[in-house]
Image 1: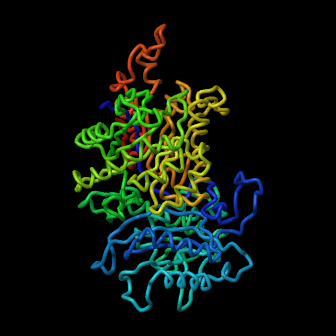
Image 2 (image 1 turned 30 degrees about the vertical axis):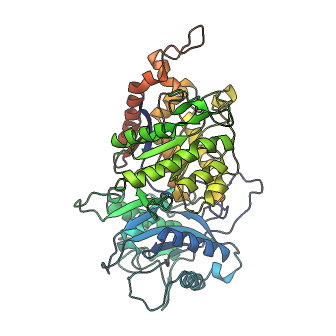
Image 3 (image 1 turned 90 degrees about the vertical axis):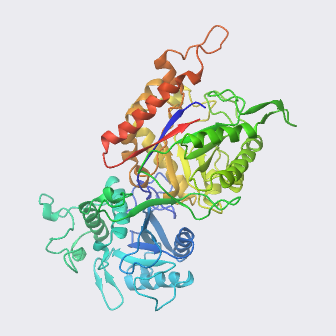
Amino acid sequence: GARRARCVQSPPPIVPRDVRGWSATAASSHGPSSSGDAHHRRDPPATAVIAIGSNQGDRVDLFRRALRALDEAGIAVDAHSALYETAPVYVTDQPSFLNAAALVRVRDASHPMANDPVLLLDRLKRVEKELGREEGGVRFGPRPIDLDIIFHRNGTHGCERLEVPHPRYHERPFVLAPLADLAAEHSSSNHWPIASSSPSTEKNTGLHRGDDDAGTRGGYGGGLRTWADPIGAGLATAARLWAGSGGEANVNAAAGSGATPIRRVMPIGGGVNGRPSGRLWSWGDRTNVMAILNVTPDSFSDGGALMMDRYDDRHDPAVNVAAALAAARRAIESGADFLDVGGQSTRPGASRVSANEEAARVVPVVEALAAMLVAEYPDREVYLSVDTFYGDVAESAASAGADVINDVSGGTIDRTMHARVANLPRPLPYVAMHSRGDPTTMQLPENTRYATGDVCAEIARESVMNANRAVRAGIEPWRLWTDPGLGFAKTKEGNWDVLRGLERIRERMGGALARAPQLVGASRKGFLGDVLGDSGRRRDESPVRSPRDRDVASAAAAVAAVAAVAEERAEERAEERAEE
């Protein structure tokens, strides 16, 4: 099959800039910034930063249950780090841990728990007990859930039961990495003034080892009570310590590199039709390839190569499942890591098919692919993605074995999509592509015109808005992927601006989105045809050349996308998505 390129770029998930977290609140320790919501509610300031860990049972599910329990107790999550998997420390004869950090806020500012860290600790311990943690276990040993207070808005606290800042956070990479995520989130959104009243001196630009007032133990973050914003200052310290220990170089580091083993991960499907369950996917260490299987008769790319000549009972062209399986096998043997199944064309001007019709095309193929992977590739990590903007189709495909939901509308066409994905039995990754309108309207001037003239900046801003909506609907930040949407609501020149500005787009998103996987799909798109001089049409309206003739240009665009990120950020590695 033909190659069509997209790039998946590395890094972690926390709530992006200005995201009103799972509780629909702004993530600022000084109170919310303007959110765009009609009521512009003033929320109480953030209460604390907590660390979350688990190495028993279904770790991801325990994380989700713990955060739901906190929410039910009136403790909102305003921002969340990526998920990190690390080897155990102190007591090493136990399973690996899943770790994260969250910025939390007691909704009722008048509640005693909002100002007393010990009362907050009591609530955290109650949640631990509800989720199966028993008192009196081995110190630093296995536990289904662990909730620790790292920083508190009241600054320092010391008693027999609790010490704040946490006395050992500085020596734990599995805590520093998530805290650095939260620090990056807020420094990118300018929520927190990290500097003191004397910003001109290095000593006073943030708490770090060696500050006169910066240590309860060994000079680490102990003087927080002297700062206007103890949480912001603590996160600045953590980010500095993380960078000093190697920072991003530690993530997915090769064995024997000397770095502390730590993987940035997200749950990715499994558990359906005999496939493995509880899988965690780590990205950023190499390029990943995604093969695209178009099960639609009007694909601009292949013209319906996977459809039969005969028609089904609805007089629609029937999907050739055998041909789809054969194409999938070729893709896997050629190195594909993902198989993406799409049941309707999203080319400019394409007519929309119903959710029922799309499901009739894609669900049997997803089900057959899932069975094929179990039977023929049991030792290969190959994942299934469904390309749909319908919530109904996403649910059905997930039940059939899809591992990823890939939505070219980012939830703007079917407003039920986010809630449907949030409530799936398994927390699947969700790709929120940038676009405007739908395939019939996306290339109209009002949708390809970017008011500021800065296409990349506006894509970043609108992508964050979509992420806000997804998070408010219940999709955890660490499940989000992004896609700048080459060929969707972009002019020819705009597409090239996007391809050149991929890193700018990511960095302008801030936080989790800046480090989440990013798909970049040049794949046989029309702007490549313009460069090749093949995008025109004959008098009979047939194309001068087939989109298949753009394969070399597609490969070059994919390489350019990877190189664009590599040049901007040597420590972050781009991943590629090629479409079949």
